Length: 376
Image 1: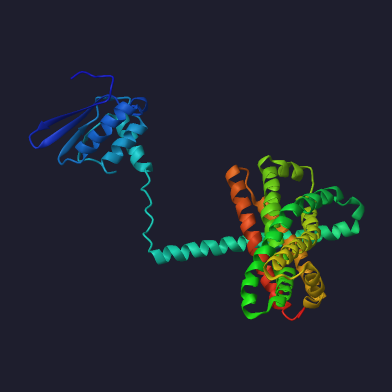
Image 2 (image 1 turned 180 degrees about the vertical axis):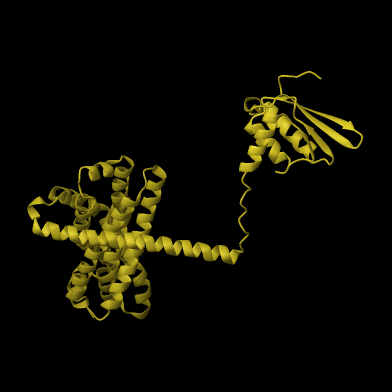
């Protein structure tokens, strides 16, 4: 049979031995063609799986390393018992056999082992994030000391801009949500207090719950979802656009110009937003108390100072400042963590919101434990 341009597999039977001859062009350009690949590979595997096979490659033209690798894999990565090749083909096959690496098979792990490994990865990942957060907090303290030593060179323009965006622009949404929460809580309390004839105690319960806990916590959660995500997105976009690298090349500190103004601005704005949210919630509770229990706003305003001590207001204001600083610091950390791609930007923003809300709840629990005797 004469040579053909396409790769061809010819099989002949001589007694109990099957002779397999490769003819035509056995090179990468021919084998990479989809039509030839789908035809040749199954046929090669079929004849290679037979017993008593004699291979004749002397008529295969242009046999290169790709074709040799395909043949070596079809032979089960071992030499056939009978093989006829040219000197060049033999050298190529021997080189492929020498440098072919056996695939590494990972041991099968049980569900308990996989769970233990996953827990370990989460633990180490959490420790790395904790170290990064502590490092960022330490840098923030150093930047604050630098600002105290040289206040005239501080980033006051950035501070005022962040104060406006995080504080003043957050007032409408926080007032609306606070008012609705106050209405809902007051109506629920009215349903229970009316059964025991304790209508007047709604002022005490609303005052303590809204001023001490719900007002600051609600404002912090809203700000974490609004401003915390915005902080991460802003810094993350700077990472994607390589602005952070440009700042580093110019010798501009990320902590002094990006982190510190945002943390200080939100630490200042958060108590004001918290007070504003609490007032809106009290207004909603006052309106709902009048509608459901018939308590006049004058009575509500008169009884509120006697029901809630001033220490609760100071405690709520102090922890609101801590909430604001924590939210801004977490948002900056995840923004600096973002890699220069959009997928990492979305993951960082999501992680920032979740981490901020979790941190706010944990800090609120710590404040509740440490100052449980304050204001009562």
